Amino acid sequence: MFPRLCGYWLDLLPLYKWGAALSSSDEKRLAIWRSRRGMLELDLLLTPFIESKFDDLSEAHREQLASLLELDDVFILELMRNPSSSDTHQEIVQAILAFRTNGLNSD
Image 1: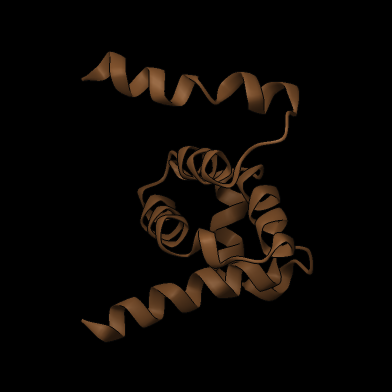
Image 2: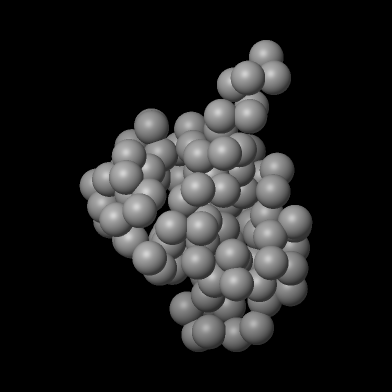
């Protein structure tokens, strides 16, 4: 199973590395892959949001998400604690937090 999983994600690396245009499904797979962080707290916030809501995001929000995923884990965690600290990522961070809050309230 491990080699198959690696191949699944490794197929995306040349596209990502060289800046090729991605299909929507490849863009979503790449975002999910990039959402797997070194901090469990971020994994629990980012991955479910991307898996559930990525297809519904506008192009502007997808760009904000891609930019957010480029940041260091500690900075992303700080943004999750204080969304108003960054004008660039404020909307997507609020969307992630709203998704998390609504998911917790529906249980």
